[in-house]
Length: 577
Ligand SMILES: Nc1ncnc2c1ncn2[C@@H]1O[C@H](COP(=O)(O)OP(=O)(O)OP(=O)(O)O)[C@@H](O)[C@H]1O
Image (cartoon, rainbow, N blue to C red; front, side, top):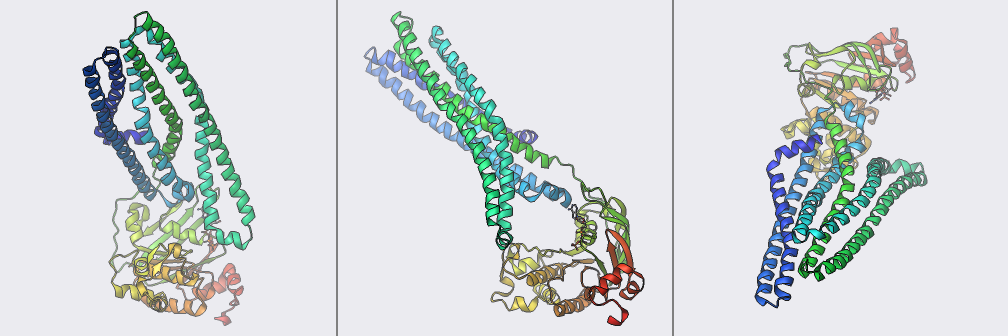
């Protein structure tokens, strides 16, 4: 509710105007039965045409005025709910940018997508309905009872009893429907997760011939959701006949008891019509309010899910120091006895890792799968803080500078080449918007991507589909490398980025890279000995620990893990070099 309060504070004027409009609308709605009664009592019964015309014109003017006011009310409700949706979306987006990658990963993509889309849509719709349906209901009910009392105190109990009966039944329905509507929200999350996996994993599912299994899994979730929705709708099915029953009983009671009162001379005939109208209006507004009240917990659950993310403490605080770098600084970054543990994990993934990277030098990182190679990049980019030790950049702890400044110094090629949709030139300029065409073409040339890009009919203007699905694995890797090279940086980090390249392209790329990155430090995570053997230093990881550091020759002499790694690729001895 905190977000709603904040929004209310920002938009107080609009909320107040809406309240006034609703008040006028309710007043206008209730004036119609009042004039109707006058037409009957003063016009029809007294055969006074002037009274009929006079009151008729009033009714007409009030009806038109009420319509105009209610259009204004609808406009304001739509405006406020739309704005609240925007308010939440912007805050949620900003927050997901501020949280660490680990914290965002902790939530997972499906639930964040659901929160940003369906949850906010729910809130928007429910807020709009609440403003239009719930807000006027108490005004109409209170005014109806009051107006009935002014017409006839003897009749006041009829609408009160009718409203109480209906409210009791509606309360019972709402109590049962609220937990069900909360369940549907959780089921929406589950559906999103399964459908997302089904759509994104379509190739794997078909290749493994698992379409039937996936269909069963999806069917089960969809059926679960449908069953809950049917239960909710069944409950609501009770509400309509109930309101009809209460309305029918009230009208007959008003007619019978009101008729009796009229014969006794205590009540005018037109007043009976007015009381019927007041009661019908009250019940109608209460029915509408009840329908919306059931949705309110669903909206509140959605709001809670948004607030959960918004109130998540920011786990990475920016430092306020600036980097003290000079073109002469030789040591660009250093890992000092770094320990790194993922959220919720019992054991650290990296332990006691210490090494330095130098300008103009290449550092290679090798190790078996899961040994912690990619985690080195995550720690350096500060996607999550190290749990012990420190990482320094130009002798400054990376926690002391802003994340933006840190990441400005690093150009990173992730293990999985992830391309965003756009054109090739937009992709390459992703980290350096003002890059000239020459700079971009040079980066593409070093990445061994220039000839295939220029061979495309539209060249650098060729479209890149979502996730780069219109390119082969090797082409995607080269585009991803060219994107990193277009960005000027102090450190270029290639996380197993050469694996989809053939040996010749790999060799050409490394040769071109040496010249291109001579002003910077290069880190290459790789699985091939041929890729790393010329590196200035090689870090060997085994199960998160650094078991070797040195050149290819040194490691072949004194690191057993490296010897095994090299010999598994037919390069076990010095003679193989
Ligand atoms: N987000 C995460 N949460 C929890 N554990 C993780 C996470 N990411 C990686 N790990 C674990 O950390 C360990 C090291 O992972 P990392 O990706 O750094 O290995 P790697 O050496 O790069 O492996 P590969 O060569 O297979 O890419 C693995 O055991 C992995 O399960």
